[in-house]
Image (cartoon, rainbow, N blue to C red; front, side, top):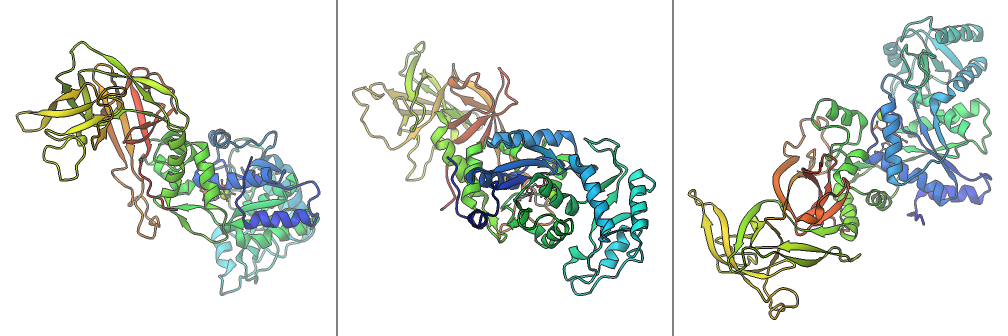
Amino acid sequence: KITMTPNFIQNMIEEDLKNGKYTEGIHTRFPPEPNGYLHIGHAKSICLNFGLAEYNHGLCNLRFDDTNPTKEDTEYVDSIQEDIRWLGFSWGNRKFYASDYFDKLYDFAVTLIKKGLAYVDDLSAEEIKAYRGTLTEPGKESPYRNRSVEANLDLFARMKAGEFADGEKVLRAKIDMASPNLVMRDTVIYRIAHTKHHRTGDKWCIYPMYDFAHPLSDAIEGITHSVCTLEFEEHRPFYDWLLDSLDFDPNTRPRQIEFARLNLTNTVTSKRKLRQLVEEGYVRGWDDPRMPTISGLRRRGYTPASIRNFCREIGVAKADSIVDVSMLEHEVRADLNENADRVMAVLHPLKIVITNYPEDKEEWLLADNNPVHGGHRFVPFSRTLYIEQEDFMEEPPKKYFRLKPGGEVRLKHAYIIKCEEVIKDEAGHVVELHCTADLDSKTGGKTAGRKVKGTIHWVAEKTALKAEVRLYDYLIETDESGNVPKDFIAALNKDSLEVIDNALVEPSVKLTAAGTHYQFLRVGYFVVDPDTTPDHLVFNRVVGLRDSWAK
Ligand code: ATP
Ligand code: MG
Ligand code: MG
């Protein structure tokens, strides 16, 4: 059922399996930090990690990487699980928290100290940074580097006991201050933070750093392939050093494999920046339909399948690139083209009266719902209708095949009509059209086969439902190369939301649940927004009809 585009990580796995390296199968993990909502970049990592496991009949853990209590919260733990489930992946009973390993991690740190491979440093964060050196200059050893094992054990225990203030001391790995790799210059592995943790409360006032917690969490869980993004490439030697130093079996211990993170045009994929948009009120929340968060995409009307297909199409690469956001739009359009029912809605109504159609008559015309899955419904027709303002032009250019004075057009699923008279207000604006219908021209009628060039959509006045329609554009403008500028706030698109208050929709959409998709014929794909109430319909435009993505 699951397909996999060939990629270098899958090749490595196949190689490992062929060599009999992991007799118990392969084991991946998705390790979000619960400090924000998941975004489309995370979707790539989720599809990859869960996908690799499923494809290779292995396991994939969900692990909350919750080692930094200052920014983490259970709100994020909950939203992350909801989003992964919605995407269609399941961790079964394999949900873990790095914070569950705090005791074990502490013991591992003590072991390192005992081996002479870690020390307590009194330098401040700024001093540590200054001592670290640069790519061209070796670092300088801390004056505290050669403390005895006993002194280090004592100080580390006192750090844990809460004797020191935040920043007063840290625990560092003791490796090589002259290493060409800056991470190997005695990276910090524990710091003091007198902060309540969302799971362990006040039990701890020292917390392990990512570089320390991550490889060990992988090893504790029996992860075989620890897949992460490219920025961790220079951390890999430390990953290996740590597990080797703690005597994990080099043949079965996890290994880190890096792939290129997803970058999208017109999109920021950094939790920090997304949080800024939320906190400073540029959007309504994490699930604003303009946000590239999973919850925002869901509310916008993206389907799980469209996101999974997108992740499969972009593949897995070893080098950074920027993917055109139109490729994501292409996937949701393809999905909805197949699966969304068609209905008629008029966003900018223009009244028309069919003067030869009886005042009190109402008929219900058969209309097809979907070209792939079929299905039918009835749409009401009557004397007074609305069409789209832009489907009429008083002085049209030559190849205008919609309605014009004296011209004919077919009303979708109904009759051919002819524009007989244009009614204007005092300011000269067109406010109403008087038309006649060829009453034999609907399906089955004598003149049903008569050809007219244009077909337009419409709704009947009496039965139409009023709706609020929200049209979205990109939140952020990017330059021609697709890069989001550093100052992304300055690049915010001020017209990213347009609200139409008085759209009209055919009555078949009445009482549909939030999340239901439609194609508004000739207009675009729409989804019912959760703001909808029984007497106030709200639709979000997912994406327009035209595909700008060329394969
Ligand atoms: P951010 O920079 O947005 O805070 P993060 O990497 O710090 O993201 P985590 O919660 O630590 O967020 O990410 C969980 C997993 O998702 C990691 O393995 C990370 O590499 C991966 N990931 C995050 N962003 C992307 C992206 N843009 N493309 C692919 N994978 C990503
Ligand atoms: Mg992270
Ligand atoms: Mg981060």
